[in-house]
Image 1 (cartoon, rainbow, N blue to C red):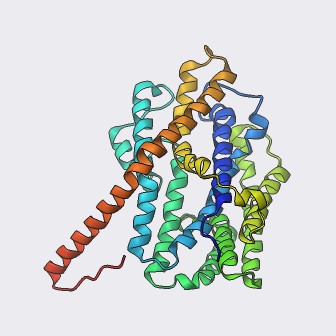
Image 2: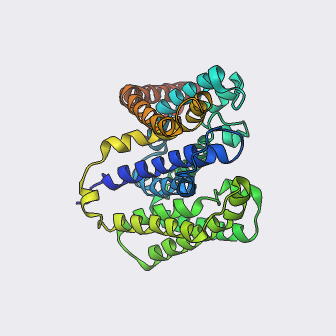
Image 3: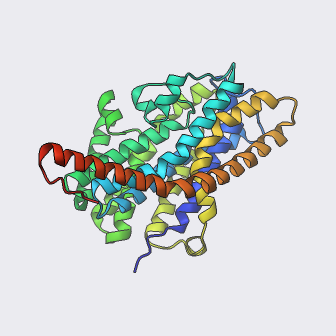
Length: 362
């Protein structure tokens, strides 16, 4: 029997999150947009490739979300996603907002209205400035969840492979004819990674086939093209030289590692549990960026930059652990119970008002 627990993903997500943290702290914050006053040239030439970690997140999400969707109703799927994402997000968003108000000026500012929209996790969709830059990835994730929920709603999740093919064709087409609105709706800038992750899940759950291998290879090609296409703008914005071969090698490594996971050839890494580092990943991702920059801006150059950077990383890891223990572990189940109760109550009210049975799907 195939296990539904992927120890590899806990470790991979943590590695991706740490790469993103180091990318922000040692390169991105100082390189552009006046976010951090502290340079860290020792690590910057390597850490500047850490932004690719978010693409690994998207691949893993494609795999796990499709697995989570199998056999579920829309209600069950949506509730599971809300319970997973929102408790830690609300706490991290609030903490970031309060620190911006306290010590953010002149580099950071935020209004109450901006904060409230950000608390929905959809500020990127509404065009409202983000309290923290990393939130754009959460908006992309939610749009992907909406695609999956729509497929569940029309009762075609068993035809996921067909939808992946259609999505892949649309993405390639929109890379040729770049229609902005459609590109944004279909997440074309990141679709190759979601599609590949979902295709890897199909290989894991249903076995290897020419079609699934073809989807993965085509997604890999699209991912290489898109990451290469973005390099010119990236290099100009951050005034740096990016090696396209390094980017291609990193993206290819993501695909190779996911291939090993889906055919269960990860050896010790797959057999060993990485639950704790996996638990740290999400709150670490949410907390680190703007809070870290604000710490740098207050403490540098008074504090040694090596001590400041690595000390901040340790503080962020400790804070992520605290949020996991105090918030995620304690409030996820009560939130699920409250959501189920609210949905049931709303359905009973609709039944009384309309006279229909309103049978709930859980």
